[in-house]
Length: 386
Ligand SMILES: [Ca+2]
Ligand SMILES: [Ca+2]
Ligand SMILES: [Ca+2]
Ligand SMILES: [Ca+2]
Image 1 (tube, rainbow, N blue to C red):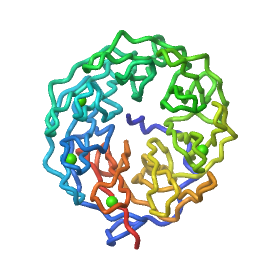
Image 2 (image 1 turned 135 degrees about the horizontal axis):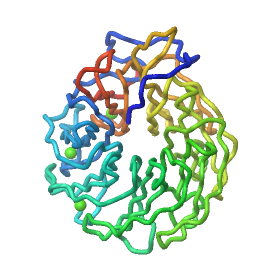
Image 3 (image 1 turned 90 degrees about the vertical axis):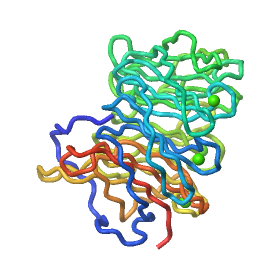
Image 4 (image 1 turned 120 degrees about the vertical axis):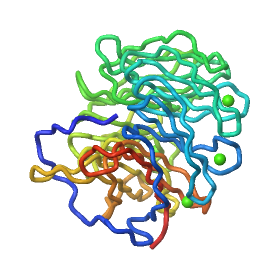
């Protein structure tokens, strides 16, 4: 979800080269044909939605309350989209099989309606009409996983509206509907993830909270759909986004958090027991808001991709970007010397979109011009070696 552009303080980050015109392979990516969506793209997911073995894209259109589905040809190009109505202002989007029919479904978290919407897939790239379930006021982030003992996928959501927000648990009925939401207390959650932090076989909750004590909270899953009280790590900044990953390859989940106001990403290495080490901080562009991970440069080590929503420099607003923090392998990252310019990048998804074995990125542009007035777009960035 875009934030307003009324930021008072100029940024200190973001020097370095960016490549405007398009060399074949710049900053680790070459750009496939641009995909068009309405203004207000807020979310993107890469998954095989029609079962042909090629990754497809789902794009959440915040201002339209819809999801656009682009079917992939397997070479980095995509068909014209089909659009599906969901709730109001879908701010995040997941692809998973909610009803266990082996067809991939789509789930949105809808901020303005406080709901989740499920689009059940038919296996051919088309979807049934959305089924809506009440989530939490200001539902923004959603994650899926098995949080109780049955085999039907469950959802956890953030609600960022006070009062009434917090973290909500929706236990799945296995048919695209959910039991009534159960709220767990949390101070102004910004983002969340489900991960087995202590590796005991049950999913735990990771919640990044911005206000009332900026922190990262780990809540142990009881395996019955409930979670224990949070164990928190204070952060020196208000986190805007959170990503669970394994940065150092020790099979203990780690976490990356974006410092939107401070132009940094913090990486906290997990101890495998729901506690974390101190955050190592890496400079990004200004207003980092979306994160993705994977081996983006093809060296076998997990990297982190991060957006910069726009650049605010000497009173001038200019184009944002996406860049890759290159993993070293010991849990630390190298900051890049080059990045890909993108107008108002709002969301990221990683996947091998052209089937060459190298991870690629899909980046949504909320509005694809310098002033934020144009239609949205999806940039398909194919991983390459110069
Ligand atoms: Ca496909
Ligand atoms: Ca399904
Ligand atoms: Ca780890
Ligand atoms: Ca690729």
